[in-house]
Image 1 (cartoon, rainbow, N blue to C red):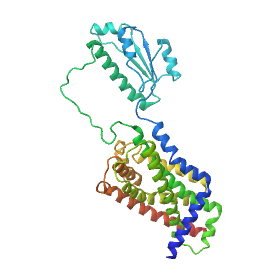
Image 2 (image 1 turned 45 degrees about the horizontal axis):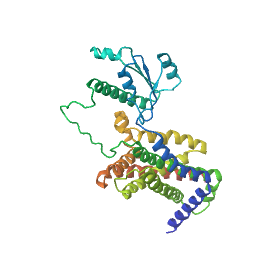
Image 3 (image 1 turned 45 degrees about the vertical axis):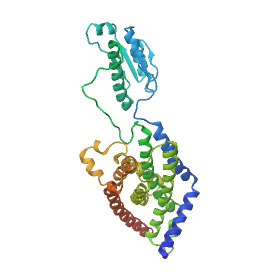
Image 4 (image 1 turned 90 degrees about the vertical axis):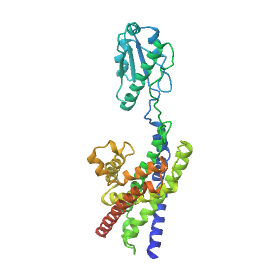
Length: 374
């Protein structure tokens, strides 16, 4: 009972210490609001408002028809430029795409020849460039075909391919990016808050005050765990409801309580990682460098940015031991696919096992560090 009260009061001390740090409070608030909103709406895997220009050396009705086939929101209204402007315009970054229609284009088509259309692409934006090139090819081929048929009606295809897009029918990028944003912030903020709490006490000298009290290292460490975990859970819940569900209108297909149960399991690992990094770091600057080396790698390999299946096979075996990978996996199953406990219990078990093992190791390292300080 006494140990429980010690952990409770030490945790309340952690909360008061965090509340008095205005910069950290503002950082937590912005991380779970502005950062997630910007990440969800500011980036897109779709072609949107792409700049495009045409060089029309043919001047035929077909070439004008091709220019009129491009319009918002996928593309900006095309600009007509001369062939001598192409290189300068691409160097200046004025256009992402420049389509060059050669002389006698329509006449060659009517004569049965296969004239070339040159498509110049600014590939500095690789994803947009690759997707946009496919869009342009389909639009040009479709418009040329309909022009010579003199109708938009299509011939009957031998098969009817029915496409069903599950879990995100309209392909809205924000549905995916917002949830990935919350997952990344849970990892990042939990590690930062826990590790910073350890370093702050060491730098301010309050750790020495705790050491002269009848407190066990386990009580000090567990107080930091539950206090910072509580802050993350509350921030995640508010962000999920107000930012993701209300502002971005992202549907939550599965059980919210089941997902938060998985988040609690994952916080054992994240707080243990923060405790570990805070223990081995000798200053806040060193801790910040370790955050870049460790947390960013965890996020990149978790499967939130790119699918795990796209990684090399040897790396997939290594990431199997990362709780962040299983956190992303069960989050996608619950939030997007509406999966229940029968679908996610293997990920839950893996997160709990690895998290508990790393927590025990971090606690032992923290106890050893305190013993050296004494």
